[in-house]
Image (cartoon, rainbow, N blue to C red):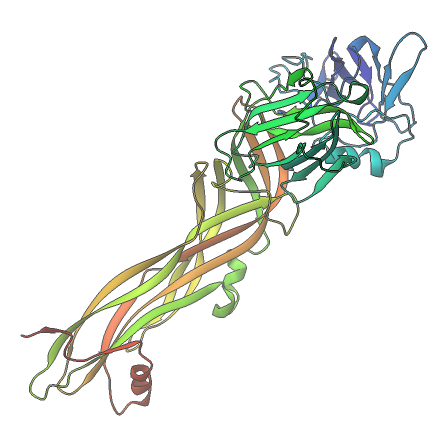
Length: 507
């Protein structure tokens, strides 16, 4: 156990250092629990985070936490050996970073408890250069050495030469991509490949790295995705066709059940990939929950707009019925059809204006709860031709969606049968009317990502909420007054015309 001010708050925090890996987990000192000062409140690292606060490179006894640059925060200083007394330093320049791997549920918050199990390492970038916030906080995040919650790899391209893995490119679900190493020329042995996957659905059946590279660097990478992969690029072998057989294989741990989510890599690279440490979650993701949503436009504001600005539209169908008989009235029936669009689509992303982070249901099992507006007809003129207007009414929506469910909008056709008596030589106008909403609103929310082993962590997201609903339909028929210009215009604008050859129902 060590004590140093990690967060720069003026109080020394408790740092639990694992004996062998050197990984360090922080318990932030939140001050005294009582006036006597015999008990203190310790805030653990955020539950379920993927990485320790300080990634171990050497044994725990070699890890020290001095403030090397005078910024008030504890840096990591690792002694490589007692002779010749060399060391490496990782500067703590990312203020407020409290992510970590400590998921222990502390029953007594005033007591410090160790993490449940040693981690697999990873964490801060080793550097002897002075702290440059734009580099030390930014660049490592691209490779998840400092976690960016919600930004997940979805594509890897790797190239190797005869003796080394030389270049790797990784694409994230927010569209960003990073590269490391120097890309070699292709040769006849095809020592390169690309693999794509859905980070929420797909898992790796094989994730192996091989030794034997230049100066014992990485020699080969072999990846195979599970059968759920539907991208067409489900396997990669960068570094095949080794003369004399492949070097030793290292099967990378991928969580407790070998189905963890790939979060990124910790690596060192120059012209080749010197070292590469894949970082996986402890188990697979099973659900996300959206909460505390704030919409850019609420339904009350839509109601204050004119109807054509409410993200609604009137849909209708109409027929004109003729009775050309000169002896008696005729009962005519007609089927009218309305086509509605129905569906809900909720997407999220780490950046505003993007939609490449995930989608409720399609991406993973999801839950959300918020108040939304549903359309409702509020006024209707039903003397002759129906004219409607609608507004939104508030409704508390709670939805739980299983993973793999489609959120495509569907077009649904409904049939309405109308019957009316048309007088001798007259015409009748029949119609059916409803209001269709097409809500499309941006929101901000907090997303909590849950894993199978009960780990969870939260992060802010931006998204779009789309919903299409229809109101009840209204229908009527009325005789057309041939002396009324409005009636005649309605008849002329009808969708279809039916004469007495339609359904004839005699008295």
